[in-house]
Length: 387
Picture: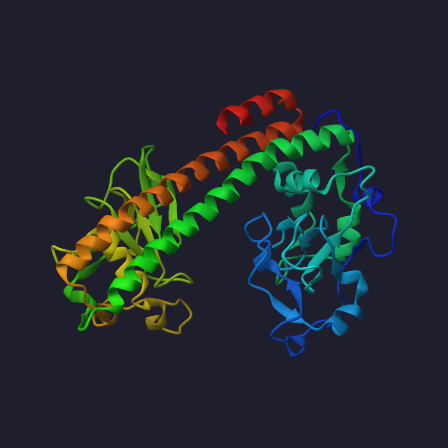
């Protein structure tokens, strides 16, 4: 670690009762869930690091009042202590809801603003040093978890640099995350506009036909990470892009369809020739008037996840997918859809690629800053050049 002093994490706690806390026992059960109310923060909201302010279950305000120590406010840090241990996030400074409540698998840490900046400690616990400090306390018997989670989180050793340093580091890394968030919104907007264009044209289609008359799903080919060679060819699996290689399997842009696992039936997009591994399908186009972009939109609206079998390892049956009925666009309509959505999908691809570059830069700077090997001023210049 750097020359910064280290302290027990609880020394940075806000001067209030239950600054570090969690719901105990069966404080919240599925029977408490209601359609709307106070959102419950679960692992899904922490899984991407930056807080996902969506996909909540809800409890009543009365229930939330019964567990005041589990209530969350902007700037509170949230740790997963059971299951996916190592997850950490922070309630946004400008949240979607006025308050939140912890699930029983999370621990809250509310810090003293005179000594500590939550954004800095979010990044520190995301760094290799921070993850090591968290994970060295994990019990792997049964479901992975922290024994005595609140006491364990309190006892963690953390750096305590001057508040000015904390703010500078958080600002540099946060600028990259802010740009990535803007890019995500651009991507979502571009893709939703593309889907809207396709829906408008397909609504006028008067006939239906089997999906297999237009596209064929082709099996990907196994390519273990150790077998991948350095190159500029994206590698795709059932969850989207998973790496790089030097040789493509496809001859051009292609939709990629999850074949097995939790993302079976989910459709992603490769804008250039790629390698698709054996957890996914790529696409051959059977109808000459269908472009790869239109094929992507057809597959997205074909409701393929509904065909996934309910088994220990969910999977999409290719023959069943080929028999799925879809609306048939006339060639002229398909050409117009393609012409209108191509620039939108190109834009989405461009900002996604930029976000990957920015995320890689952030992940490179993070341990260097937290270890003191990189000066804040140098990091600020690097970030300014990147943005």
